[in-house]
Length: 110
Image: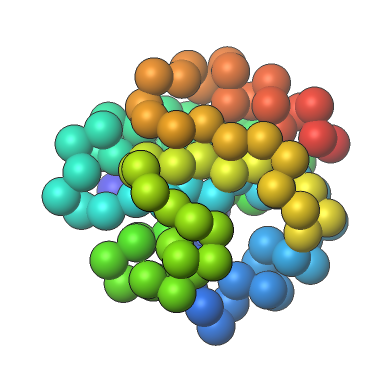
């Protein structure tokens, strides 16, 4: 079960939740069938719990939101995008990153 503060993004709420955000946003592009995506899920829950209101943690299911996946050129998942002021500032491909590494990237954008 995902942390209660993690936001599931759709084409309908993306602009409001990400582009208009006043804090750094981590967007996880993932899919149910993706093993590494399931591995990174608990790490993102920990990041969400630790960051609180200092950042937004969001998820995009690439099977359900193909338009968003296409907009960001998603070719490999999990793909973690770090967005500030509506612009992609950094990214991580795969599940080989630590909670502390993700928090450092978010704090650097604050």
